[in-house]
Image (tube, rainbow, N blue to C red):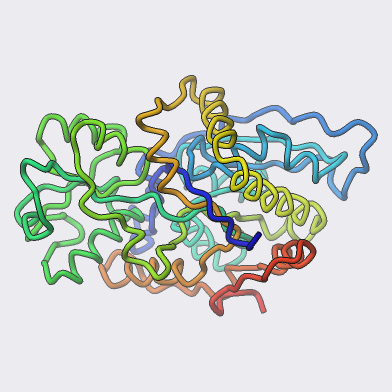
Length: 371
């Protein structure tokens, strides 16, 4: 099976791009930064050989775009590769808090969106983290009220929600509007189309009340809007080469990578094998992810939300490095980001070692690797 396992699914918390490295640079995934929900260490396999660390601390979001982590932990697939090294988990609701935890050593490896990864890397002047693999692509849609908007041209003058000023979806929408020739002030959101920054938790109610006419949002918010009568006007995947763009990466602290390369390699092997299991057991994988969500958040997603959301996200091992650079370029173009130096943000040697051992093709870093 190729390195880019093609199975879909979803949920995401929107990822925040740093805004001119000023006050807004701390904004999160479209939600307020929150403390990690520290989990207990999973028991290591009895009698199994311990790697160079007693424990590896893994962070991720209770979101379907982090399904590799959800399922890898739930099904014990990471632990199987780690042997006598125990897995300790922590979950987050915002990108900045996960980056803070990585910098503080509270986690060693994390699943996170591209924009917090960019922010964490650039703010530390390239010293804090490396992106060591991909995890998910897609899962972002423009959903509109079909009674008000029947075509792209009818977006003009309408109020369209995005999760947060400068977050990944906000930047993508601003870039798309610019390409259409429409003018919008990036900071205020005012212009030919009014961009209304609205938390994903609030967007469905705003849509039902008519205060917004549509939204450029990640899953499962997009599917929630469709369940309320919305119509998908555009799938962002259709705007990208091969319909792929990064929505979730795997990052590691540089300190941990240097001290415990064998542990990092084991986690990556677990990730690759989890993606393979997801691709070959799609129904079981969806149920496993939903069960993990219920454990972490107290409730599972109903079928009319999880089924379409699951289909819209593609899980894969390739970090789609070229799309990370493009997303950063779009933010610079919009005036929301100073041009970042992303050289060295990737170290894909451990992942490519795993892929090679499994007879799969290597993945590239678009010239942004440590070498």
